[in-house]
Length: 136
Image (cartoon, rainbow, N blue to C red; front, side, top):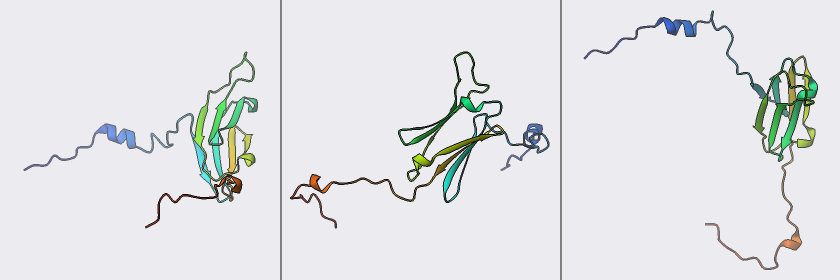
């Protein structure tokens, strides 16, 4: 029985050659995410976009939205951009900050070390509780 041998193609060399593709191809709407013990950091390259055209919003306390929007109806932003991220559970929504310098937008989402819990009012608990199931 004969096995086929691998025969390199010139296309394989061209597509994997570091001299041709020395930089990784990054999509236009790429946002870099990093984290440290204190916060999550989102950074996006937005060259040519004015500071007034960038909108950073939090939707339903769950999503971070970064987008560009025209300041007035007569102009449109130099670059159309929109990304939506699901936020982690333990963050401080009131402490979110954003900075724009030299065409790079940096959004810092601080971590919260207190759990967002819920409160049970003792007046809402009935006097007699029914046992629905017992642990084994």
